[in-house]
Image (cartoon, rainbow, N blue to C red; front, side):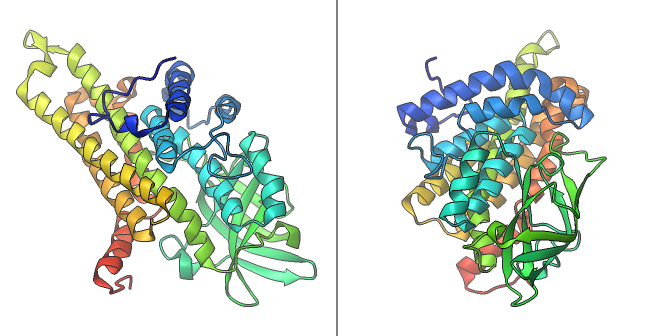
Length: 392
C-alpha cells in the first residue's frame, strides 16, 4: 500500500515521518477503515468494547513502541503521536484503550520498573497477552493526586497490603493487571504496584450511564486488604515524581488524540456538506457552511503544528511538563470548538449517531477533562511562565 497523507493534514506534516513510519501508519489506517469504523457506532451505543480488535492492534505492533524491550523498529514520538491521532480519527475510545495499554500501564513499568520487571511484563503486554490499566484517580482525588492520594500501602513482612478506592480507571473491567498508585504508610511517599486483577480483595465495577467515551470500560476499583509481594512493587518508583514522568509521556499523546477527534468530526462534516442538497445545491456551496469548515481546518492545522513540535521536543530530550500541558490545554480547547462547528454543519441530523459527528461531539467532553483538566494544565504553564505557583 502506498502512503497518502490525509487531506485534513492541510500543511502536510505527515511528510516529516520516515518511510517505515509512513508504511506502518498506512497499514494501521487500512485496518481501522475496514474493521473498526463499521462497528464503532454500535459498540458506542451499547457501551461495549470490541475485544476482537485487541489482537490485531497488538499484531500491528502498536503496544510498547517506546521501550527497548518491545520496540518493533526505530520510531519517533512524532510517529507515536500520529498513531494516536489516527486511532482517534476513527474513534476516541479505541485511542484511549491504546493510550492506557501502551502509554499509561506499560509506561508505568517502563519508567518505574527495574530490569527484571520490564523484561517480564513489557513483552507480554506488547503481544496483547496481558492487558493493563492505570489506577491513579480516586473518588476524592483527581487533580490533587500529587498530595491527595488516600489509597494506602502498608508494609507487611515481604509484601504490602493495599487499601483504598480508585475511580475512572480505563480498561479496568477486563484488565489482567492494574498499576495501583498508593501512599506508603511508612514514609508517606507514593509507590507503584502491579496488581493482578484476580488478587483477593480486588474488585472492579463498571461505571454505567456515561455519555462520553462510552466504549471505554471505566471502572470503580475497591482494594480491601489486597496483598501484593515486594516483587510486584515498581522498584524505581520512590515518589510522585515517577508518576508525573509517566503522565508527561502520555499527556502529549492525549493532545494528539484530541486533534484526531477533531479531524473525525471535521471529515464527517465535510462529507455531509458535499452530499446534502438544500436550495438545489450541496450545502458545501454555501458561504456560511464553508466558513464553519474553514474554522475547523484552521483549528486542526494549528493544533497539529503544536503537537508535532512538542513531540519533537520529546525526541530531542528537551520537553518539560509545561510543554506537554500547553499542548493538552490548547488542543482540547480547540477540539471543543471544532466538534461544535462540525456538528452545526449537520443541522438536526447532527444529533443522531448515524452520521458519526454526534459521537465525536460527545467524546470531546471526556477528552477535555482527562489526563489533566484544562485548568490544571493552565496552572502548570502559568507557573512556568511567571515563576509563581497558583494551584491553591
